[in-house]
Length: 116
Image (cartoon, rainbow, N blue to C red; front, side, top):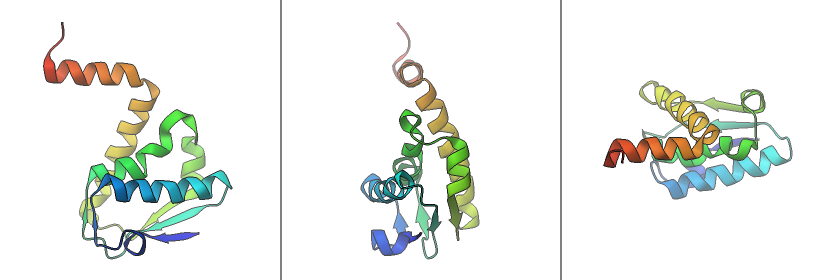
């Protein structure tokens, strides 16, 4: 299955969590049926980590899909050069967050508000 991001979100700006959630839902539907997916970012001129966290980062929640499964079944194409590093950041953070959600949230809170 090939999903063209621009056709789904109807804009060349992949920036909102709502649009990311739409992509996640389509990925989840396909992956639950063991269907591989190609995410095509052709025409996307602006992308944010908020969009990627909700579309890709959520895939790592609750160990629903292993890294091995995602590496084998998710292919990402036509990403602009300057956006490629965002994927690595999002995946790394998602793995850290979902591995120790409480610790991650506590550390983030401590960083913002200071520890008790």
